[in-house]
Length: 121
Image 1 (cartoon, rainbow, N blue to C red):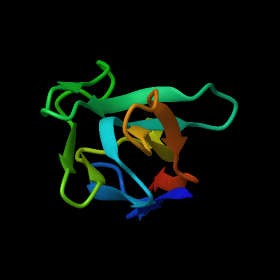
Image 2: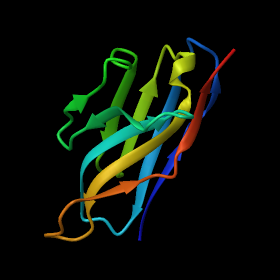
Image 3: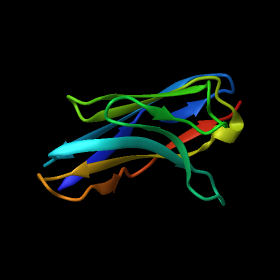
Image 4: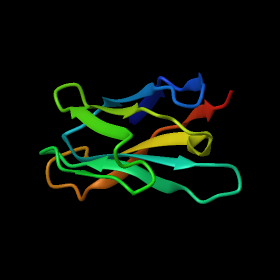
């Protein structure tokens, strides 16, 4: 069984910062891409940031220059540093990891349970 656990969410004022963490535990052979997604009420889940195993990153224009994704391969952890937060960043944030639980397995996507981020004065 593999589990992703997110932490670091909460309430922050506009212009503030938060750092999300997501740690994977369980039987894992390797992890390829890691990413963060978010879903606001009444909206579809959207990409926030992704990072490959060698550190290449992708951001949508909505967060580029404000958010930064990083990872620790030794600890199977991914981080999301969020700066200059805006009310429109309010959403439930989910981490996702594409991993192999054993050698030769086709990569599977594993999702965290989600964590609330609220940006409000």
